[in-house]
Amino acid sequence: MEFNTEEPIPMSIWAFQTWGKEQ
Image (cartoon, rainbow, N blue to C red; front, side, top):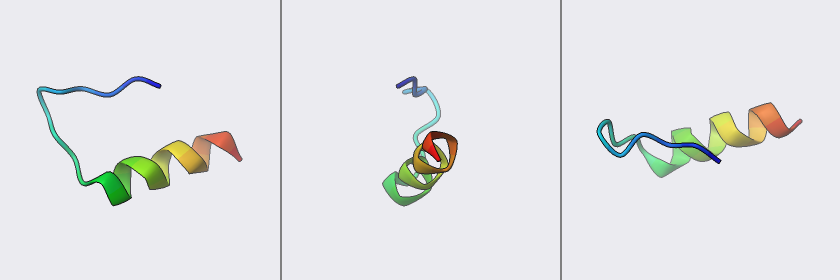
């Protein structure tokens, strides 16, 4: 899993995008 610490994003959105790619 890759995430940019320079641009923090809501966990909800991060998880949503992550799960979206998983499916």
